[in-house]
Image (cartoon, rainbow, N blue to C red):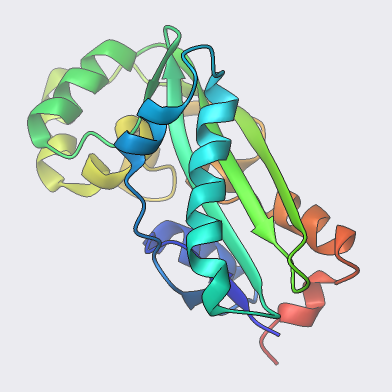
Length: 199
């Protein structure tokens, strides 16, 4: 049995690889904006990231019967607004000017589909305290392109780690995939984590 990651995120892959699992990578092609627009206006931030994670896992699962499929989606909650990937240097600078010196919540939705089609869907929340970064560092970090494809315009495990003062919660979830969450899902399916370790 294999673990299939419905993502092309190098960070999520790295988390699993460092934890002994070589995932099958099958990026899900989901229209995230259309899906968000289809949700009721009163949907909570947690419901939004869970809906996106579920859509990704369900898009990929039919291709892998009898396997475990994991879908994830992360967003930063700041001032009551969910923020995804900045995609550009300019937007990265704007985001960092808004979040520098502040604490926000990184929400990661997870959907784990088991080998018999059962699923576990929920979100994790981790408080992230951003450094009061200097303007020159903000500009230099944005220019690297590293944070453009990252929820909240930052990484914890690479250059962005310089500008994160503290986290409270699950560090792997901040990087994009909660190992404790996936472990609990596997246990609920009657599986163990070590079933997926590379021998």
